[in-house]
Amino acid sequence: MENNPYAAPRAPVIDVAAEKSSRPVLVWIITIFMAFGTIGGMVSSLLALSGNPIGGEAAASYMKSMGVGALDHLYLVIVMAVSAFGYIDLFRLKKRALLIIGGLFVVGMVVAAIKFAVQPAYRAMLATPQGYWSLLGGWAFSLAIIGYVWWLRRKGVLR
Image 1 (spheres, one colour):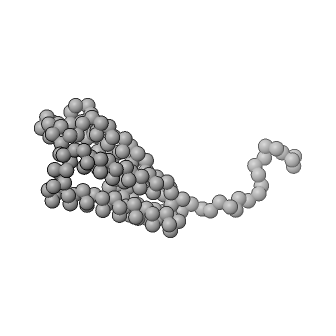
Image 2: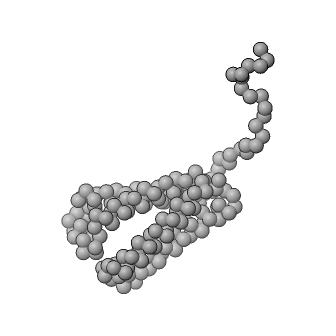
Image 3: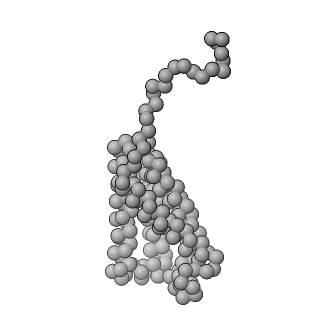
């Protein structure tokens, strides 16, 4: 029977390119490093939300003195969840990884600016060189990752 409607198509598929199986080494390093940070942030935030922060009562009283409350921990849980999606997309070499990771950076900058404007304890943390340089170092690290992901997208590695 030559006209079988249930037969598989016989035309060759020529418009689909073979998928590259290798990832850049730096993608592996970034993904593994961020996985540890995301899991650690998620666990510590969830424990703090449950009333059992890592470090016990001393840590809880210190966080309260810094103005860190339940909304801050909830915000961090949400950020960690979205961050996990972004870094999974980076590992999968998806274009939207740049949008997610860049968006998280922008949201973090806005939240830091608001906290700096309204919380004296946050401003006090930045008055010390350790607080100032750790904040700048974190931003530089994040910008380096965003720049690398942008470069991967521009080179056509992300699809």
